[in-house]
Structures are given as structure tokens and as C-alpha cells.
Amino acid sequence: MYTHYDLMLPLLKIMQCNNKVYNLNEAYNLLLIELKCSEEEKNETMEDGRNVIFYRLQWAKTYLKKAGLIEYPKRAHFNLSKNGESLALNSIEGINANFLSNFESFNEFRGFIPKTENEQVLEYTQDKLIELTPPEIIIQQSKILKNDLKTELLGLIKNNSPKFFEQLVVDLLVAMGYGGSYQDAAQAIGKTNDGGIDGVISEDRLGLDKIYIQAKRWENTVGRPDIQQFKGALADQVAKKGVFITTSNFSKEAIESARKSGIVLIDGDKLTSLMIEFGLGIQIERSFHIYKIDQDRFNEDTF
Image (cartoon, rainbow, N blue to C red; front, side):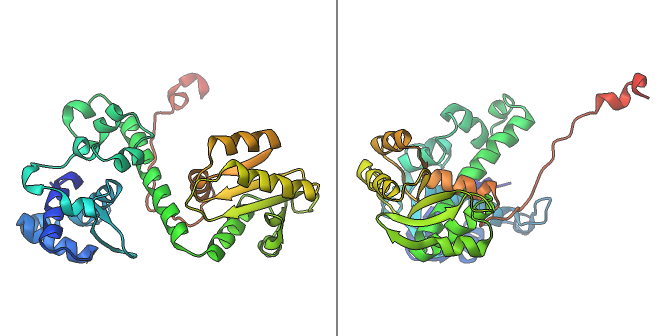
């Protein structure tokens, strides 16, 4: 059975031989030829009915993207990056977590897990997996899935228009219980253009207090001057509460300035975490339950 790591090197070889833009189905069919798969291997399915190779090809593609070896020029398509083009594949015996860890972007992707623990999960070797209990393996893998989802969400947000981002902010705030109704929130966000304030939204359904919003779909780090400008705009409105939302991140100076002023900061990482928490822009693909014995049910004294 092929793992997603087993598919990476053949996939890169295919793409180097014919450097163009691929879709997943095309890459899958070429991969079957490259691997000389038997009919049994081609038709092997997972418990939920999905094709094993096709499913793991998607993960192989994701990991190569995280390592910066391929890129997504448009939705559902991918091609080699400059790093992928220059990679000397003939000198590589295989690709695994250790190999991908040579690329900084891949380490950033999996950086939330200590390297040694991450490799215990990613390598799928018996001697390393035995060090983890089944629930621990599930927890580790769920973290990887969540981190990948957050990265993909942020990329989609950045690829859309500022107008889309404004609407996303509205949807999120309403999902979190702010702004009363969607209509009320939509009227509040993006309507002020008042000295650095992008919108005002009710903190509760009765509108007893207001929250002033700054929402920026940026690539560059938000610095202290941006926070100072927002702080000044809040002072002009005699406002007590402000939230600065961005798709990028905040400098240390910006964070310190906001802390002193009581301004809440939401960067790209926090934004996507909230989207997942409140079910915005995502859907459940599959869920797992871990069961344990109910000891009370087998205690005669409880009957």
C-alpha cells in the first residue's frame, strides 16, 4: 500500500518531465502509469469508499506545496515551483518527513508539534508509532489536519477581494453572537470610513455597547503606527472597545501598543481558528468517537 510519501517522488518526476499545470485527475492517471500499478492497487479503497491512491495523492500534493516544491496557480490546479524545477531528483532515493524538513516553509507548517514527535506520526514506522497510544496518534494527526485547513482558509481569503473579506468579517462576528442580526451587522461594517475605523458593530442584540472594527486584508505585518492610528480614531469617537482584524500578523510593538490600549488583535492565525471554531467556511468531512467502558454500568452497587 502506497503512503503519501511514496507518491511524492514519482509525482515530482512526472512534473519535471513535462513542466506544465496539472489538475488532480490528470496527475492521478499519470501516477498510475508511472508506478505501474496493478488493477488491485488501482481499485483499492478506504473504509469510507474513497480510492486510496487518489486520496493520498491529495496529501502528497499538500505536503509538497507546504515545502514550496509545487504551487497553485489557480483553483484545483498545480505546477512545479522554481525550487521544484531545480530539485535534482535523480540523487534522491525517496521523500519523507526528514527530507521535507530541509525546507523552512514545511517546518513552519508543522511547527506547532515538536519535530521528533511529529516524525513519530508522519513516518508511519512501527518502532516510532509504538511509542504513541492510538488516541495520541489521532490527536497529533488532527492537529496536522487543522493546521493545513487553517493555511488553506487563509490562502482563499487572501485570494478574494477586500469586499469579500468585509463580508467574511460580518459573517464571523454574527456567528460569534455580535451585531444582532446579519442585516444589522452588514449595515455596520465598512460604512464609516471615519479616521481609520472600518465599521461599528453592536456588542449585543440590544445595542447597549459598540465595538469599533478595523478590518485589513493585508500581506505585510501590521506595525505600531497602524495601531496608533486606530487608537486615535477610537479616541475621537470616545470609544471604549476596538478590534483590529487582519489576514497578516502584528509586530511586537503593535501587540504591546494594543495591549496598553485595550484593543483586541485578531491576526490571520486567530481568524482562521475562529472560523473553524464557529463553523464558518468549512464543513465536517468525517468525525471519530473514542469510546471507553462506563465502569458504573458494571458496578452492582449502582443497580
